[in-house]
Amino acid sequence: MTDVLTAKQRQLNMSRIRSRDTKPEMLIRRGLHAKGLRYRLHDKTLPGRPDLVFPRYRTVVFIHGCFWHFHKCALSKLPETRKDFWRQKLELNEVRDKKTVTELLDTGWRVLAIWECALRGKHRMTDIDVLAHAAKFIRNTQPTTLTISSLNEPYT
Ligand SMILES: [Zn+2]
Figure 1: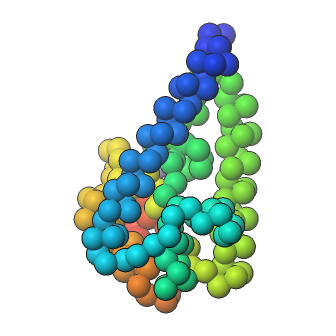
Figure 2: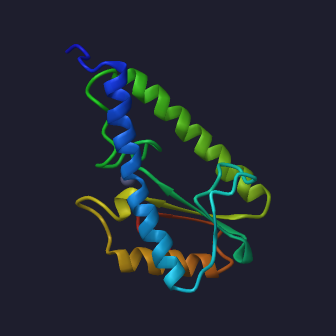
């Protein structure tokens, strides 16, 4: 099958996918704020420019779009065209994400990753559950990492 999209069209399509990722972020931001947790946004001085930073708890939160961060869940199917190109690109993102987590942990930060599929799609959790798990993790001191997604059971 030939790739019928022009580069410009593809860029538009991909920017749509990317912008959809901001919806879960807004939900998490509002929800944690309502629970009395105060954060900084997109701190450029920290590895990976975390979506939310909770200085008081020395904890950062990433809200990951499943496609761009190559979650390999039901929401992260590779495009039918140029599969190898996308796989390579997304694998690089995955490697970068792992390096980011290592750097944060090495400097004493705790890291929470909330994946889009925890909030969207067939296997999503309730928003209330996601926010409760996230808030609990942020306020604790252990463990140092937590992943909330459709693929695993969150730490309780
Ligand atoms: Zn996912």
